[in-house]
Image (cartoon, rainbow, N blue to C red; front, side, top):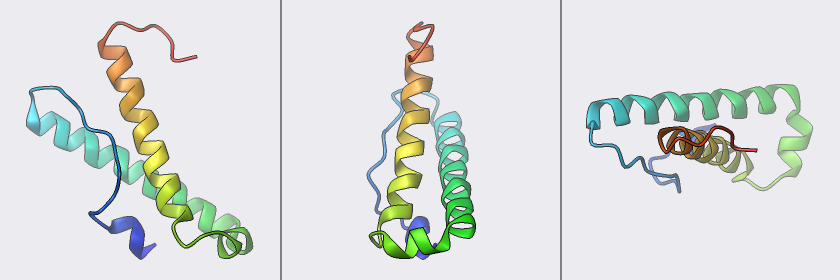
Length: 82
C-alpha cells in the first residue's frame, strides 16, 4: 500500500472557494479510497498479486474521482448521477 500514500496521483479537483473544506473533503475521500484498496488487498491477495503494481492506486483514485464528481453534481443541483 506504499504507492497509495504517494502524493503523485491523478485525482479530480474541487472548484469551491473554501480551501479548508476542500482540503478536508479531499483527505476524507482519499482515505476512503485507501480503505477500499486495503480491503481488496486483504480479501483478495492473489488477485491483487496478479494485477498491475498500480492496480490499488487506480482503485483509490477512481473512487476519489467518483466521489468528487458526485459532490460537484450535487452542488450543481443534479438530483441523480445515474
